[in-house]
Amino acid sequence: PFINQPIILKFQTSLDDWHPDTEDWQQLFDLLNQEELSFISRLKTKYEKLSLTELKICCLIKIQIPPAQIARPLEVSTNYIYMVRTRLYEKIHKQKGKAKDLDMFILNL
Image 1 (cartoon, rainbow, N blue to C red):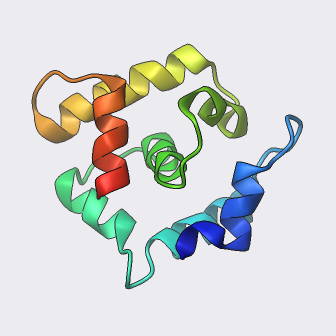
Image 2: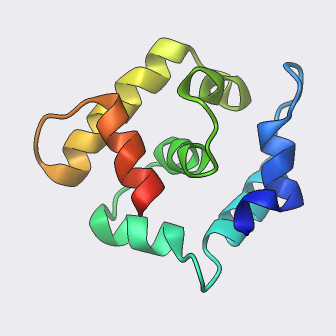
């Protein structure tokens, strides 16, 4: 399954001082958008105006990075991640929701 791919394992097991570079992110995007998953394409169908940060957060949720750890590769605060997850759910679904609601949507997409 896709979850055992080297780039995903790199993100999941990264050390505190590791910061993904452009190539790491591109490998992750390419993997998640392969034909059998087409995750990014399906996500953009639901909400076409994703920022790069929002897209990265969705990808990290999809590869099952815990929300508390999503902030690390993005070099932002945990509170910022919570806020973006809540806001993004509202953008996609046009209704109020919780950060965990976004996580469930992403994992099922």
